[in-house]
Length: 402
Ligand SMILES: [Zn+2]
Image (cartoon, rainbow, N blue to C red; front, side, top):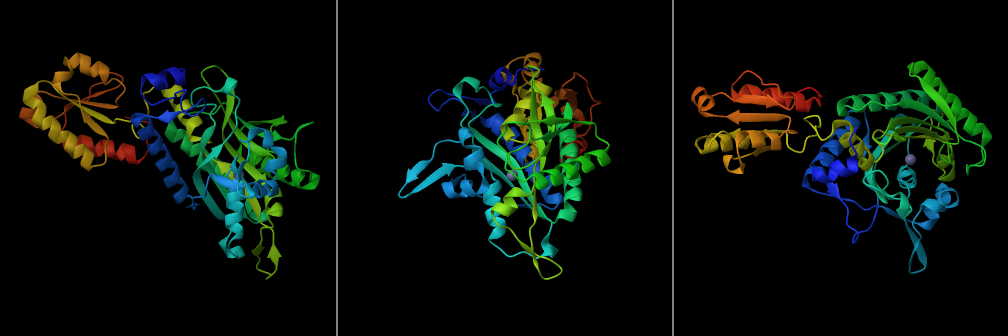
């Protein structure tokens, strides 16, 4: 595996500057393109799975986090409050409290459940400067988060559905988990007290895992302060394990925020909150993609998907025209003109681009294009239309094939 910090800088994906601050990376154009593709993929997958997207602010009043329990259980990881007039405002440590308040802002019938609320939103963690590095330990985090408000009877199906969504996203990203972990409370941790609710959540998660057939291990001391969770663990280039995806069952926050829905019996009931994240933070997910693929990303994620290489100045015009057609089709295409060096040097320069299209006099004469893949494989010369429709299909399917 590659070290994402080194490779990410070499590839011009992201960087940091002491003047902005440690743990606060910025994204350069190629990194921003990759991130945008990943975020759009997640949003599309969520929409298909019945989620509705929202936006909520990255700040909230201290009272919000007192109610959610973050203030008493999680304060050490939060930035200090900002005094604003007579109030204290905080950079949020998670999106859950905002989503709970948003659910509460409308009355709900059992017919609307499960209600799946998703957001790719900012959150903040006051990491100590000694542990910061690259994209894996950052102070400003873009979280892929969602909260499913549902009845107790719907929890098992929702957890199983979330696990399936996570599994198919990992496949499209070309990444593989190290293990599934059932994260339980442990001795000495800061957890909300409600033994019977903890037991109920643990039973539900265990049942789903057992029925899924996925191998998993239970680990004490890894639960969230409000409930147990299924964590999907990956390993980084230094051999360290980390959590990328997670599914949690929470009875605590619906209680704290007094969430309700009207049941079929006309009475008010308490929903359950299932928290789930497909890729965790965008930062961590991109760090892992860099380490696994070494910059040779699946075509749907590649900052440049297709590069056109005219052999000489004579092919510049048809090469430009091909790039133009690619852009119209929504492909990320560039020209590597003969002025940039020999054909061999330009191919080396473009070695991480999934499709390298060479146009020489023979191709122009026959109205064909010659394609070279990243592994050095050459496809039979083919008409440009045929190539472009093949590529757009693979990209639309988020395929890892070329
Ligand atoms: Zn949450």
